[in-house]
Amino acid sequence: MGKLRVLVLVSGGGTNLQAIIDAVEAGTVTNVSLVGVISNNKTVKSLERARNAGIPAFSVSPKDYEDRALFNEALLAKVEECEPDLIVLAGFLVAIPPAMVARYSGRIINIHPSLIPSFCGVGYYGLKVHEKALERGVKVTGATVHFVTEGMDEGPIIAQKPVAVEDDDTPEILQRRVMEQAEWIILPRAIDDIANGRIRLVDGKVKHI
Ligand code: GAR
Image 1 (cartoon, helix red, strand yellow):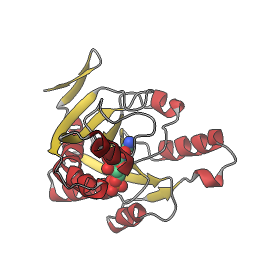
Image 2 (image 1 turned 90 degrees about the vertical axis):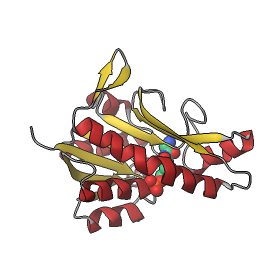
Image 3 (image 1 turned 135 degrees about the vertical axis):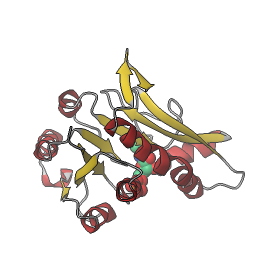
C-alpha cells in the first residue's frame, strides 16, 4: 500500500501544521505524504510554512465568492484536486461544508484546544476557548483530536491530553501551554496511528489496535 495522502486545512499561524511537517521530516510520523495545504486566508504564515517544506499551498477565501455556497463548492473542488486519503483540520476555523463531510466521511480529523465536551461547539475556537476556560476557573484543560461529523466538535474522539491551568494564566499563556504540551503531540501521533492502521472505528467509537 502507498503512503497515506494527507491534506492539511488551516486558517492562521499554522503551528500545528509545523508540528506535522516536523514529525514527518523527523520520521516520527511514517507512511504519510503531505500532498497539500489549503488556507481560507491569503496571507497567512501557514502557506509560507508549507512552501518552505515543498508542499503545494493554496488559498480559497470566502472573500472571493459571492456567497457561502459558492465558497463551499470551490473549497470542495480544491480538496478533491489534492486527492487526499485523510484531511486534517489544523486550526481551520471555517465550518466544514456538509457535502465535504459526506464525501470524506471517516477521513477528516480535527484538533480542538479543550477536553471535549468542555468548551467546544459553535463559537468556541482559537483563543476564545482559553478565555472561556479561564472565566470558568477550570484547573485542568487540554486538547482533543476527533473525527469530523456534521455536528461541530461532536465526532468520535481519537485522543485527548490534559494540561494544567496555572493561577496567573492569561488566555495567550494557556493557549501556548496547551499547544506545547498537548496539541503538537497528539495531532501528529493521531496521523501516524491512522497512517499505520492502528486506529479503527467500531460502533462509532475509536479503537486503538
Ligand atoms: C489551535 O489551538 C487549534 O487547536 C485551534 O486553533 C489553533 C490554531 O493554531 N482550533 C480550533 O479552535 C478549532 N475549533 P495554529 O494555526 O498555530 O495551529
